[in-house]
Image (cartoon, rainbow, N blue to C red):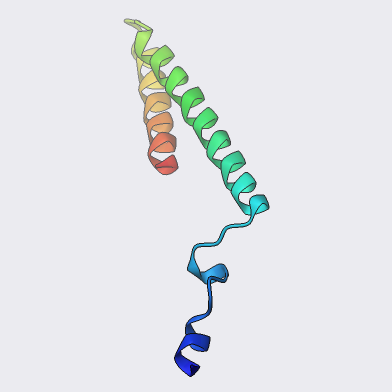
Length: 75
């Protein structure tokens, strides 16, 4: 009997998630997906730009590196 009480009977620690927690998690997941999509669009935009100017190319490479780091941080 004591063993059953120690382990609980389906409380919060055993996988129960409230509707509010589920909704909050979904909002965070959707925001993260939108942010990832935005970063991927920025990445594609940078990759599509062509330039022969060394300073511009260096700036694009730096921007690409920063965006790829942000994408990696989201994972």
